[in-house]
Image (tube, rainbow, N blue to C red; front, top):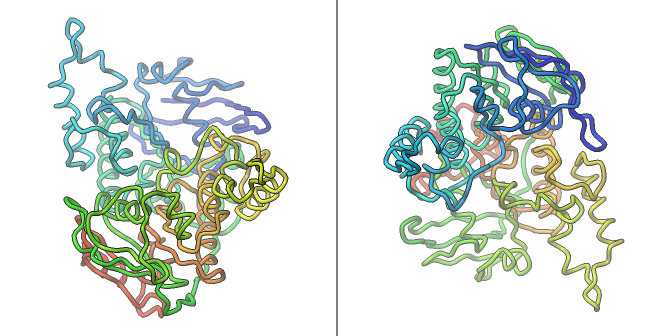
Amino acid sequence: MLEIKNITKVFPGVKALDNVSLTFKRGEIHALMGENGAGKSTLMKIITGIYQAELGEILLDGKVLKNKSFQDAVNHSINMVSQEIQVIPQATIAENIVLDRIGQFKKKGIVDWKAVNEVAAKYLKMVGLDISPTEKIGDLTAAQKQLIQIAKTLSSNASYILMDEPTSSLTKFEADNLIKIVKQLKEQNVCVIFVSHKIEEVIELCDKVSVLRDGKYVGTKDCKELSRNDIVKMMIGRDEADKYLGRLNIEDKIVLEVKGLSKYGQFNNINFNLKKGEILGFYGLVGSGRTELAKLLMGVDSFDEGKVFIHGKEAKITSISDSLYRYGLGYITENRKEEGLILDDSVLNNFSISIWHKLRNKFGKINLKEENTIATSMIDKMKVKTPTPKTSVGSLSGGNQQKVSIGKWLTAGCDILIIDEPTVGVDVGAKEYIHELIWKLAKEEGKSIILISSDMPELITLSRRILVFKEFKITGEVVGLNEKKYGYQEVSDRIGAYM
């Protein structure tokens, strides 16, 4: 049994946890829920020794546990799958998987790399990744890196496994596989502490759910006794909004057109278009080509054949700078930690960095007053919870970081936005807000949006046309969503038929 007693944790200006007490038992899948900033990740980091609490104690099987580091937790058979991508890009997949226990593979000071690769291959197969353990991890997608983090944690054979948003960037196929693994862990008498904002997933999978709100413990209940609305009410103190978004004002004008785009070894003859005021969905499994295509369009990677037209003129994009400043094309990455934000810098600078060139005077100095006005306005618009505009982005909750990541491109005034997994790791309240924001950008401001999402309900709710990807091909197109010709299940079935 793992007991949390009267834990209090204070950061500058914020009481992240306030006298929280909880109990977790072996052979149990125990959900930990709450809005972003409720204290879930902070509690998990205290359990695993990453943070130290000001007050309270942790007991393992009745004995006080004093984890001063993450390695201490691992030594006590406690491990965690972090929501944040934490890998060594230059190392191989196998090296990342056994990183915390590489000493176990040493004989007379020499690492048995054959054994390392065999162990890694076993757990890669378990999480459904068909890639070589000797491949470098740096070039993989965020979702693939997340699966490797899960493989790493599973390989430790811990008795208590904490999973912080483990399915947040996974498609339904990968998430279903992970759920099977979690159920197997329960049968092996492992305790899984499961943090997720996917309420249906929690109800289906977990035995109990404990809720935190504003750093305080709300309560613990059996999942079989709870409905979705019961959990939402515990989390946010009110019922969930249920809105039908309606039709978009999609114009016939094509703002982005891709003709015959090919990249050797990946894409071959990709063709599609995006209209003014449209939300176009991209759906597919991890590695199907959705994000890879977005990076080709943004100039992050280059293609070998084909043409891209923006507002009817051929676009020559060789960098993010080209896409932003020459063509008004923005990309909100799925991997905000590594690619979307400067975590050590302030909220203010993250919002304004894309327009610094506009704020400079003839002497090259930035107008700080104007910068502060613009950033403060965007903080209010995006409803970012931050002590001050100068607070570092890395200290904010995941949901607030995502708001900053989106707001950075809105500050730049992009007319065409590629939004990749916009609600990964955010709570029901923040998700509702982000959905409304995306909808209003298209409906009221006439923005044209490509929405990449592994969350099928999200994609069907927001998109008015969906392209399905498989093995770097567009295998199908689902239309008629603006006129609501089909119900949710029929749209889901039509997408599935192209997979």
